[in-house]
Image 1 (cartoon, rainbow, N blue to C red):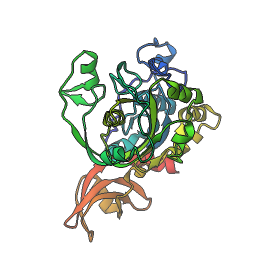
Image 2 (image 1 turned 120 degrees about the vertical axis):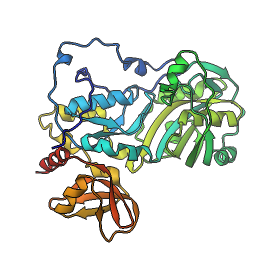
Image 3 (image 1 turned 90 degrees about the horizontal axis):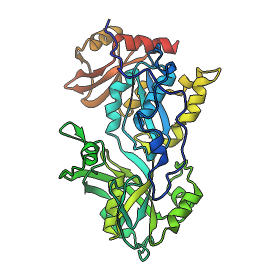
Image 4 (image 1 turned 180 degrees about the vertical axis):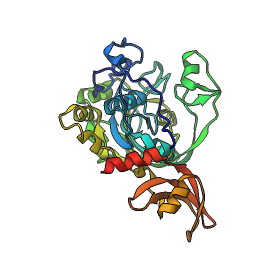
Length: 391
């Protein structure tokens, strides 16, 4: 039997829930991000108790709250479920909320596929102010009067044309992108500015309108599920000589919405920075499929805690768009050992391979010249664990 390689992370996690926080106030650092800063709280003796973990497989779609990092949400879910292995499919900044797929067990083997998919965001960009981080957590570095801007549909047409389709984008220094093994934000915090090369990304769809109320933002997407503080929006619009844009963007992987907001502001001649961001879709996963983290916490702590497991989607949801192929018992065993199988199959780059009777996912593959060639395989322990969960 092949032993399951578990994810070596801390068993400890504070009992207090990661609850939804209010929108960050203007002109000051986000209090929410400070509240979730790692290393602030001392570990209690209770938190150091060894937890017996279990093998769980599938995808949990969490609506990430403001103020928490993606890794903190991941560790919270892992702790609540007592899961052996978990990972997420793409980082959201603490300032951002929205779709965060958490992969458990065998699903972590296919998380890379989801990293490649397109994402859709709703955002608010404040015009007339640039910051050191291109978002509301940085220091204001430049201000300019934006009161005379024409933000009508006609006035924004030139911006839409300039930023739709393939564009060049320079990553922000305050980002997790690694250079020579170190994240860019590490260089930035040390006061070092690197000369970064622009990268090509694709903006598949872009909508913008001037933001005067929550209705302006909500009109861009039926999937918003916003909890925007109206007083916060009023403060935003009331700041002298600044205005704001509501933005909806569908983009390729690697696109920085902070940079997009900043570049749009520069194109308009006044600069800008991001003050709010919500991911409403990640590949085929949309915000209306997600569960709020506090609601998920309540499920795990209720008398019917099994309901929490019902929120898990099967691992194969990550293989949407793959050609399904079912193998006989004999071929399935050989395929799992890494052997190629031959059959009357057409060439295909993405294949999801299943065993028959019972039907269970074996892994992913591709077909070339009639040969089914393994790519990523589940191991026997994972397959048996999935079958047991179906009983």
